[in-house]
Length: 390
Image 1 (spheres, rainbow, N blue to C red):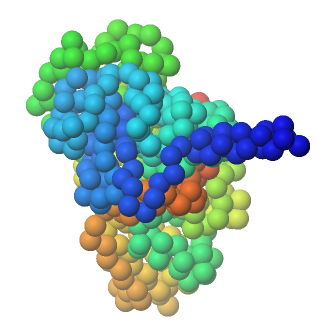
Image 2: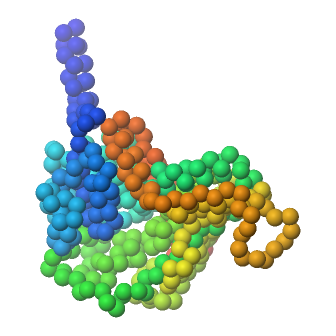
Image 3: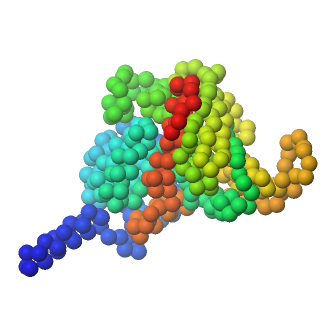
């Protein structure tokens, strides 16, 4: 009996240790930033403004980025080139991962196995087959993992969800998603990259070995070894919203086409159209061009009763009209809501709250994997020139 009691006691202590230190209501959560480019710096600045956390470590393969991040968001933080050294730090409770896409799964798995909670930017996977091992590692670790689907925490997106899911638009059969950006501006004026300040081998990591290339380093998202273009970047935000609202997270099939019309040096096309068929009898379409900002990004839900225009600035609900019209401007808005701030604020707060409570965050790893899966299917269709079934 004594041996049994000692065994149970030891097991309980080991279990408690595996969860890391227990955070009290007034304890500051100690954060490490990995891959501290512009997005990660922004997220760390949001944490700084929100309070309740302290950035104690910074990691980036680029010395310039490390120094910049420390200057802007964490002057007292320790600096690392190798993220594994950061994960060894006992005083780091959680990490924010903003590294390129091909690093997301390796870094997240190593982080949760090191006992760290994780915020990882989208897409959480770089390849569709990474989803299952990532989910297994996260579930096994019992760590909190929040993915970069910040719409899930944005109040007006939550409000719009209730309208669509509650049948307020009637039956929705078509969801148009779109995102337009201007990647032509500023290319000629880009500052030269000092490769001596970059650990290129560490940047490559699991990617195939290749000589340093400034274009691939700066615009890694548009090269297959490191990213998946706008289908695993911009589209993921909107397809996650569509899947959330429609309670259907896996397309039946995907089709896509695109062209290198403006930026031929990229592997990923600068202009794309893709379509996804979902169980539940609805389609999701995605339009993207990288030559101009006009129209920005958003979603349009077409229902039998009403239409909803939804974007990061708010949403409007427009009732179906009694007769056909070709006028481009929608009138007689039935409901209109505006948003004046970035939902990343609530999303990061939700992450911190769940670190304390051990509750499931608003965008857990399953959500991130499902959104990425749609993007990967679209890329498979784009590259093969054929419809791809899930």
